[in-house]
Length: 338
Ligand SMILES: Cc1cc2nc3c(=O)[nH]c(=O)nc-3n(C[C@H](O)[C@H](O)[C@H](O)COP(=O)(O)OP(=O)(O)OC[C@H]3O[C@@H](n4cnc5c(N)ncnc54)[C@H](O)[C@@H]3O)c2cc1C
Image (cartoon, rainbow, N blue to C red; front, top):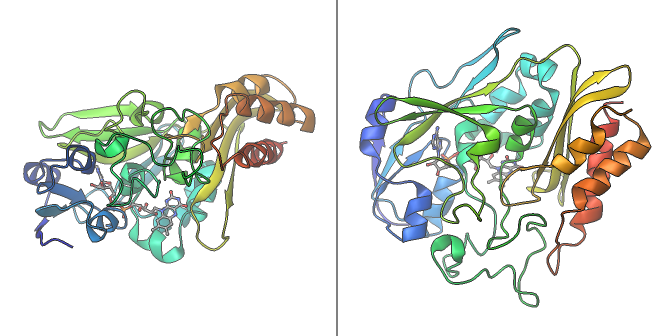
C-alpha cells in the first residue's frame, strides 16, 4: 500500500475543495497520486490495498454533519442521507413498511459487520465487480487497456459476469441495493463544488459501458452524493426483492430482482422490474414490465414476463446458467405480489 495523507472533511464545501479526482478517473487515466473521497471505506480501501489505486490523499467524508439522517412523510416520501449505513436502513421500520424491497435488498447485502461500515452513498458509487478489473495485473478496457479478459471464450473466467448489455465490458454493477432503489424510481441528489445541487433519476445515474467506458456513474470528481429520495408510495404499492447467491452467508449477487407494482384486486396496474448482476449497470427490464402491465398477477403471466426479460440475454461462455436463474427469481418475485 502506498503512503497517503488523511483529510477529515468538516463540511461538503471543505470536502470538495480537497478532492481532485474520482476513483474512475484515476484508474482510467492511470493518474494515481490524486485525492479521493472515502465514506465507509469498504470499497475504496480494497483498491488501495490491492495497489491498483495510489491516492496521495484520502478525504474522509464519513463525518460530515447532516448526511446521516433518514426522514419520511406520506406526502414527500423518504429521504436517506448518503452517510446512512446499510445497517441503519435495514433496521428502519418506515423503510420496511413502505419500501419492502429496499429493506429486503439491504438485509441481504454483505454481512452484518460490513453493513455497519457501508454507507448508502458509497454503496451506489462503489466500482463494478470483475476480477480482471480489480486485478493489478490486468489492464482491461475500463482501465484504458486494450481488451476484455473476461470475454475470452476459452480463458475468460466469466461465470459471474453480465448476460445483458455486455458489449465492450462484461462486469456487473456491485450494488444490489440499487436494484431495489431503481425499482422504486428513486433519485440521487448530488452537490457540486459551486454548491449547486442536481437531482438525477436512478435510471440515469449509472453510465453504461457503451456510453462511456471510463465511467460507471455520472459523478464527477467535484461532486458528492448527499441524499437518495424515494417517491411516496401509494396504498396499493407492493414490492418484493429476490437475490440468488453462491454462499448464503454473505455473498455478492449472482442475480437479483426487485419488483414494484401498483396492485388492484389481484391485477397489476403498473410494474417496475429491475435486475441486478445481469448487466454492467442495474437493468430495468422494460420487456418484463410490458408483459405485466394491466394483467392478472398469476403463474402464467409471471412466466411470460420472465421469458420476455431474458429474451435480450446474450450469455458468455461460462454464465448461461444465469438465464434460467433469472427466469426463476423474476417469476418468484412477481408471484410474491399475488
Ligand atoms: C464481501 C463483501 C460483500 C458485499 N456484498 C454486497 C452485496 O451483496 N450488495 C451490495 O449492494 N453491496 C455489497 N457489498 C458492498 C458494501 O456493502 C459497500 O456498500 C461498498 O463496498 C461501499 O460502501 P462504502 O460506504 O464503504 O464506500 P467507500 O468504499 O467509502 O466508497 C466507495 C466509492 O464511492 C465514493 N463515494 C463514497 N461516498 C460518496 C458520496 N457520498 N458521494 C460521492 N462519492 C462517494 C468513493 O470515493 C469510492 O469511490 C459487499 C462488500 C463486500 C466487501
